[in-house]
Length: 72
Ligand SMILES: [Zn+2]
Image 1 (cartoon, protein in one colour):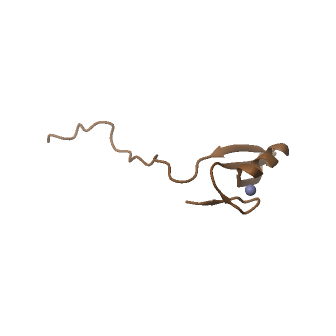
Image 2 (cartoon, rainbow, N blue to C red):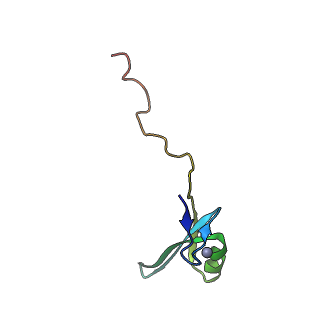
Image 3 (cartoon, rainbow, N blue to C red):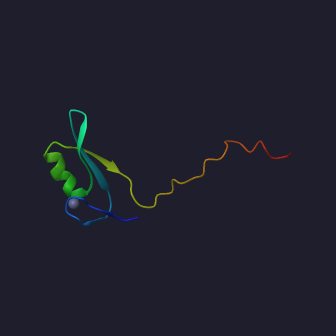
């Protein structure tokens, strides 16, 4: 899955960052940006956190912990 920076509209290659800004508990800003734009966001004092996009192998199925149902 490709991600587009919601600030400069370039394709995000590498790390993506989620920039949020809240005022009095209300979310004023919630965008995904590239590593370039996150620097600008941080300079502005916005909250930024790295997010994982793309195809990491974290989709292991959640079956039971043990195969204790075998041998019926
Ligand atoms: Zn950008």
